[in-house]
Length: 489
Image (cartoon, rainbow, N blue to C red; front, side, top):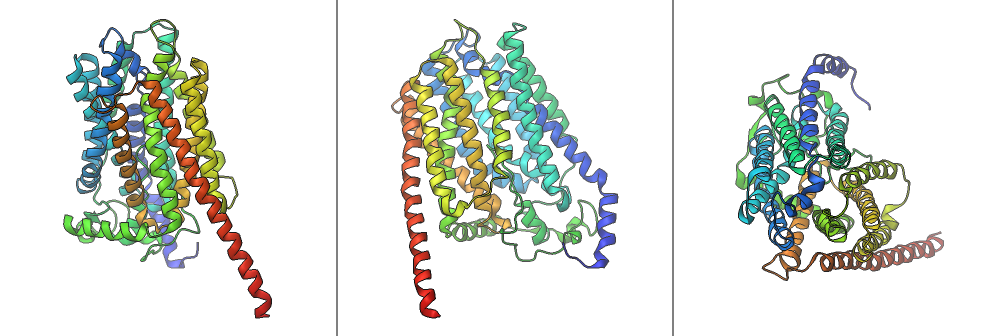
């Protein structure tokens, strides 16, 4: 990167004096993310609710309790998004920890349908506040450390989730622990995370309501997708936002000029107007719109499958009659998915040309995996199909993330990813209300998964048609250009 010589001493002093400035909040946030994700009881939640501890029926769990999470997540997502920025991240991180503590405390001691439904509301709040965890770190570290701290924070949650799943499986299968004991461990781990969060430094700036320079703003917009945790890497094709200055001109939190002088107060009406204008401008791009449509549609189906997969497994092989390996399957799918994400980052292909066809092909494979999971009533086939399902989705969502990023200025990352997630949740809510909820059709779990398989097959057909049309149009345009070139000569 080219830069003036006068800026080099500032760079050195920033790094020399800012080591502890980034290491402390990053370490604390990683510790929070790790302990918050170590929940060994989660892969066995359905078995716990249907078992003697709660003694709930299948209809109550699948058609009356689990849908509450979807509804609460959707209802809270946008208010939490604004509150996270207005309150400057840390209070919402604490709210997430408190919500999860309430969730697991009620999971241990709450009795009856209404109490467990209330529990699901708090779990939805804990999920919606994920955005605070993934965006906090960008407000307290220097821009040249963003890629590093992003990888640390994401790795902490992946490792925590894997450790929790494996330990839960070992404690159940080998040590013979009860599921109640696993929930105690989960509650203890979340409580440790909540205690750790209190020591996080309070940020002095945020994205909309307490912002500083436009260059720092543009980097802050690299908020990851809440459910998937995908980080967007900088790329030469990504347009630079106006006012992109040398990174050394942006002070660390607490360095340089005071935050009070740089902070600009923005009223909520202006924030909403700016968001609406950015929304219209972002989705005017046909390429970006295509990838965003797939993002929203597929994420809706993905949420449904992972939410009700344990229920399907329970119907295929009741846990009362035989040992189950849900924890091992969740750990394996997470690790293999991470490997697939790493590999796809090194694949060189023309996604602009073949992207829609690739989405169609892989969406069909997802549909096949869900169909096999539903129709072949063998638990090991179900496990294998679930692992394939998660790997393909994690691979495709990474490609979609990158493709969306290449068609946006960096300052609009958070808006587009947030809107895509919101649309996915809205579609999931509609699907849940019609297919799952007892007030709707209230279908059994096998019929639900047949609908989910058909849903992904429909996505595949839509993008196959769109991809063939795009390829034909590109070749026709190329032929026209070649036919014109001799005439111009």
